[in-house]
Amino acid sequence: MTGPVETDVLVIGSGAAGLTAALVAADAGARVLIVEKASQWGGTSATSGGMIWIPGSADAVARGASDSPEEAFAYIRACTDANIPDANIKAFVAAAPEMLAWMEATTHVRYRAIPYTDYRQEVPGAKLGYRTHDPVPLDGKLLGRALETLRPSAPAALLFNRIAFTMDDVHPLLHRTPGWRRVLLRLLARYYFDFRQRLKSPRNRFLAAGNALVGRLGLSVRERNVPLWLDSPAVELLRDDISSRVNGAIVSRAGVRTLVNARQGVILATGGFEGNAEMRRTYLPGSWNPEWSGSVESNTGDGIRIAQNVGAVVLNMDSAWWGPMLKFPDEPRARLLTFERALPGSIIVNQAGQRFMNEACSYDVAGRLMIEADHPKAGTTPSFFLFDSRFRQHYPVGPLLPGVPEWLHQRGVRQVLIKAGNWGDLASALGVPGSALRQTVARFNAAAILGDDPEFGRGNSAYDRYYGDPHVMPNPNLGPLEKAPFYAIPVYPGDIGTNGGLQTNENAQVHDECHEPIPGLYAVGNTSASVMGHFYPGAGGTLGPAMTFGYVAARHATNENLH
Image 1: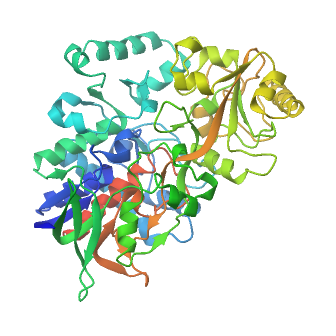
Image 2: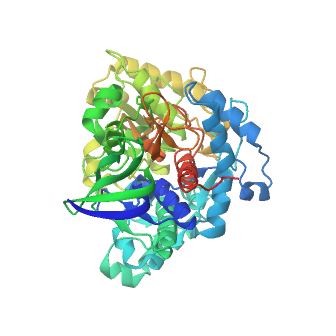
C-alpha cells in the first residue's frame, strides 16, 4: 500500500459525467483527482453520438423553441418509473439548462440545439425538436499527445469506419439529397489531406460526436491542472465507522494499491455493468451476452459493486438503454441498428417468419420488444433484418454500404450477410418457415404500396418519419420488398449501456439500506439508476442527465448552491 494521496474530490471514471463533475469541483476551488480503470480516457461517452437531451436551453430558446420546466417534468413523469422521485426529476429539469449554460460560459464545451424529435410523441409534454443538442466538432490537434489516449469513436459513428461526420451530414448522405456529393467529398478531403496524421495513424483528428464532447471536456480539465490517472481502477471505498462518511478509496495504480483520501467527497462515474457476464445473467436474462452490447468492454459494474460493499442499495437493475444490435465477428462490440429500420423496403421478422413490432420505433423500445416477444417457436434472439436489392442499392446497413460489392466489404459483413434469389431459399438459409415468411412479406408489401401498416402503424409518428426517406410517398417509412435478390442480417436484443444502478437522491447522493444518503458518496451517469427509469426520452437521454447530475454532485460536494 502506498500513499496516502490527499485530495478534496475524487472522481472515479473519465466519461462525460465524471469530467463534468471534475470541472465543476475544480472551479469551486477544490483539489480534484480523476482515476480511470482503462488505459484510455473518455469511457462510453467518447464512443457515443455525443448528443445531450436538455429541455429549455438558452440555445433552444434562441432558435425559437417553445418549452417550459413544467412540460419537461410532465413528459418525464408520465414515462419514467414510479420509483423515481419527483424531486430527482425536478432537480434534472432545473439544473440541465443551467449546467449547459455554465459549461459554455466557463469551458470549451459547445453545443447547438437541433430539430430532433422526442421519442414519445404521444405523451403530453413531448416536443418535435430542440431538446436534443449536438456537440460542436473539435480540432483534435488541440489535445496534443492526449489524443493518443482518448478512446476512439465507435466504428458505427464513423464513415467507412474511419471518417468522422456530424448530424448535418447524415441526411444528405443517407438520402442523397441535392449536394450530397459535395458533403462526401468534403469529408474525404478533410480526412485524406491531413497528411501528417495519415503518415502516422488512420485515426481522424477531426473530432465529432462523443469524441468532440469528451475532447472539449478534456481540454477544459487540462487547463485546470486536474490530474487524470489511467490504468487505475478503484478497488475499494473507505467509509469511516464513526461518522459513516465515505472519505476516500483504494486505487490500484499500475498494479500498486494506493490510498486516496477525499476530504469533500467521492463521485462514482464508472459506467454501467454491460460488460459483466455474471451481472447480465443475474439482472438482464433476456439479453445475457455482453457481446450484444455496443458499449465499452471496461464497463463491468465496478462502481456499483464497491458502493454495495459500503452499504449502498441499487435500483432498476433490470433496465438498460436497449436497442436492436448487429454483431459482426471482426468487431469487438455490437452496432446499434438505428435509422436503417425506418427506411422503406425493409422489415424485421422473428424465427417464425413473422413481424412483431413497428420497426421504425425508437431503438430502446425496439430492443425491449425483442426481449418481450421472445417466445418458444417464435424466438427473437436473433431476429432477422430483411431487405431487397432496391434497399441494398440505396441505403446502408451498418458497415454494409450501397453501391459497394459484397466482396469488397470487411470479412465480418460477408460472414453474417445472407443472400438468396427468392424468399423460400432465404427462409431455408435462416431456418424459418418458408410459407410463413412468404405470407408475412406478401401482407406487408400489399399494405406498404398504399403507404399503410395496419399491423403496427409504422410511419404514423413524427419519430418514425424523422429517419424515413422523404423521396418515398405517401409514407417515407414504407416500401415493398419486391426486387430480388433478397437479404437478411441477424439482429440481437442488446444495449448501448445499462441504466440501472445505485439509488441516488436529487443531489446525486448514494442511498444506503435505509434509503438515507451516505455522506461523501455520489453516483452519476450509468453507475446510478437513471432519472429516466426504463424510459428513453430522446437522443441524448443518457448523456444529458449524466452531465447534469455530475454538475449537481460536484456542487453539492463542494457546498456550492445550485441557484
